[in-house]
Amino acid sequence: MNLIQAIIMGLMQGLTEFLPVSSSGHLVLSSSLYKYFTHKEFVSGSSEEVVFDIILHLGTLLAVFLFFKDDIIKITKAFVNACLKRDFSDSEAKLALFILIGTVFTVFVAFPLKIVSENLINLPYIVGIFIFITGCILYFGEWVSEKKAVKTDKVDLKTAIIIGIAQGIASIPGISRSGSTISTGIFLGLDRVSCARYSFLLSVPIIVGASIFYPVLEVDFHEFLNYNWLAFVVGFLVSFVSGYFCIKYFLKFLGKHSMKIFAYYCWIAGASMFVFFKFFA
Image (spheres, rainbow, N blue to C red):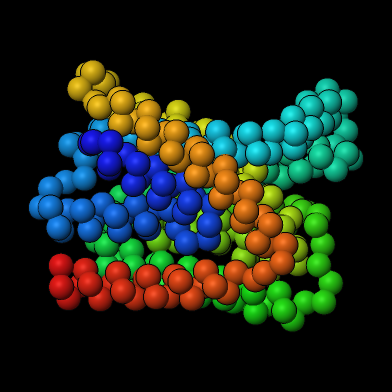
């Protein structure tokens, strides 16, 4: 792992984590292309790869925390008060509860898919198919949105459960987490900006949980001193900065435009990835 690799991966994570194009799919794409052209693995070992991936996600997690800090503080306070009073009538307390419920359903769906997801990392042409499917999800969500005259900014229990399931399915490399959750919300009647806000807040428990869970299972702590920690810090900073500005401008974009342009991109990227790695790599 060198600084150039760290910058590329950090930028890829920061941009694609929040844009509806699949961060996992693009990380597979970049690492597969690097391996194809250099005949070297992008990272030195599986344990280092896990740690670096976690660090990149922590960078984008910090971006979410800082951008939505007021929302997170308000929701957390409302949830604590609701627990103490045993009264969840407050809208922010309900939102916190729905995020937790959605997270539970995400785990139930994502955990059984873990083995499948890990195997797909070495099959980039299959990941290309899933990126193409992401494009279909985005386009269908926008098509449904155009048919619905009335939209809401309120998440209910049914919406929380279904979006949580969609987030779990997005553990498959190539299926965009933000794309699937936002499109699902649009399909269920939410407006785009509210969908994106809920999607980004819903990502927080999953990233925090994975950052705690995966090191215990996957990381060889004896190798820690051998990692290029300077590259890791650079990757973290790049993913944080690019992620923060991506959230800011993506929300502005959604306020005025549809996500069809991302659907077109996913179709082109997914098809190209499939053809290249299936027939030429």
